Length: 422
View (cartoon, helix red, strand yellow):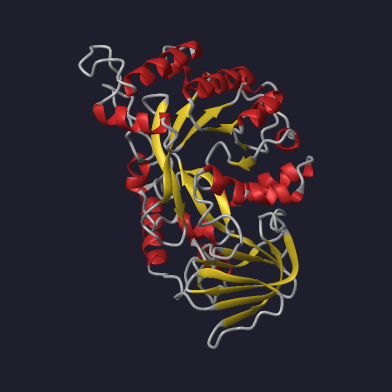
């Protein structure tokens, strides 16, 4: 990226940082098709009452408190704010500009650092935040990326409301399979050998001063916490054979895992359901990009759901800049057999449960944060759009760098080139 373009991105970030959301107000959304993403299902002609940023009542014919903002939905869909997938929103601005990327740790000596926590670098004023938010995305999981080790480090969930701190517990991110083989002696078999040693170290079976130790004292403490079941280990893995090994390892070590990717997860769907291991699939992965994904198929999500596996979504590639497209993945999964309600839950309640924040976000229920989206049409159809997003009961500005550039270049020229406003 040129210096001119990078400077433009910086200026846009400064401009958007000053576009603060409106203050929280009492709110009544009336006569909506309320998709609760809970066992309550969908409520026709439903009302949702919000006070002090929290959902206080759901029903029909609810009265608006004095001074409350009343939004007439006229039957349009109302959903929880959606999940943006595992991304680097706020810890990356431009993927090709290393100075703006904080998601990976590159250490030549002692690269195994599970104590590395990418949430410490989160910038709530990132240009990418409003880009995702105006499309109905209300929360995302910041994921550490594998740079110098196949154990990438920790991440966690952030809400895209301008809050500086993550919510809920941290998650540990690991990569297994061919994509990490260069980090493990060019052998996936070595990955399990190294994992076993790391477990031994975390459980103090290897002396701290051993010349073969891979972890720092802090790293041992962090890994021991996950081995005790405190927090989720998210494993990027594609091949069915590797997933089988992962399930055996997780059962043996009594750890809570989730799978990201899982191109061939459908092949072992009964095992995943029995182990209660959720999968965040890329529902557009249908071609064997490598030998780990020979069995990739567009009905992966549908097959997993039919077997009883909890299914959510994440995407490979430039997920941070394209998180707003995650609902396209969900819609694609629905088009290939996943029930519509399961597709919506995969964008809301399921990822909130996976990352330990379901008590706060991911569904429309009394007592939860009022993170809501009113849609112009079907939220899983990219032909439709979000009309208004509320996070914590606050109406979010429905503009981003993209919308401002659109308005700038589509405006009347007034005798000047379109790039000029005056």
